[in-house]
Image (cartoon, rainbow, N blue to C red; front, side, top):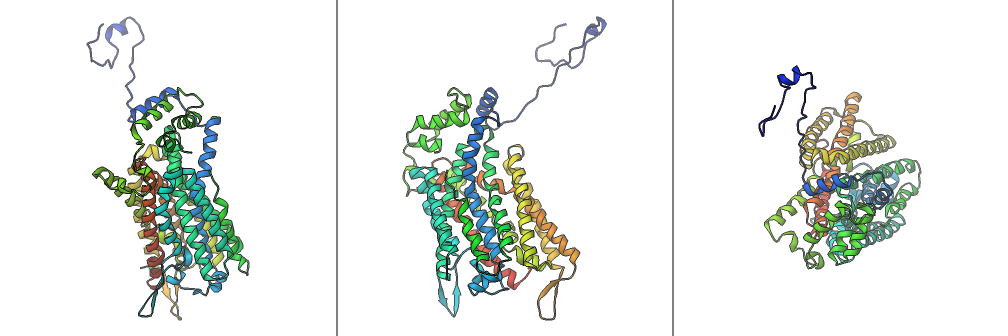
Length: 494
């Protein structure tokens, strides 16, 4: 029996059943939605595997690069940890209990003193170092390539670590913090574009998302090392963790930078090695090569290190820049700053005042966050960028409200005016909610912090755009360091 054109046969007809033949059952057509048809077609033809020798060579390159993220993770955790040391605070003559602008040295040091009506306004030197580094990070990467940008950043971090760890006075410590800030801006501003450009196209979302998860590869030892040294009574309690800050500053050419600098064969060789399993006719390699030839200008803004107009010269570009800046600011303003920067003060408000217990819980929180970040990076291509951000943000807002409510309703003033927890059960519940908050933030936002920003930027403006990302991130970090610190000291949970 013939079937009219375009009619779908859904059941066996009577003649087929009468003759005893096997009914023909047609499988419904499966439709898969893809963002890049050309890449999906090339991937289907090549069928790349994650377990080949070439892939493991690529993993090694990307691993060394992601250590740039670990540098910032280590610094954030180690300074948060030693800021609670009596040995550290006494040595530099800081208050042993209050979180004021003077103890803004948690993340930085003084850079400008403005004397007015007997007030001294102090700006964080690490943050100022980051801001200074942000303005030279883009030109540095565009000038000599991504690896040189990472090299300069690592070298400055090593010098800053030495100055900081050997400091005998506050001035030397401030200089070390400033140098660390400059290096911490140079390295990541080059490293994230490098990871995005070197990652295999078929797995770029996950590979690039993993970069920011390595923040916790630094944060975890940045908490447990100070936990171990906190038992020392000398200045070595805080000097040893600071010495170890230089360990992550390892040094790791990007094919797109080579293409942009008219080194086509070198770029093709790298893509063949890491994306084509040595086959120059690989569909994925050929697709990448054609896209780069069409996309990259040899006279673009990346050839003019002083030219930042590429970030603002059209409506489309301004929209991309706005998304990059928004990602930078929002990632610092969702409550994670308050939770991570002043974790000891929050635990004290929850009734956990022993310094060693606080450091142990902070280290455990970093481990939980790292697990969440890895899960978020692994599933980001499946979930989609915006759904991942929107859903996680909604949950984060609810969790942070619960944390502050638990803290507010569990505080009671003692006879000497100090605040203490009324209920140990409620304090434990608050700690649990902080852990859940950290897990959700890490799963939803940590992989996106670098991945989303680098994806929305064009190649020619990528380095300078990431420098702008770093700049605004530090402005938000400055707010968290000082305003949040004063709030915790003066207003408590409010």
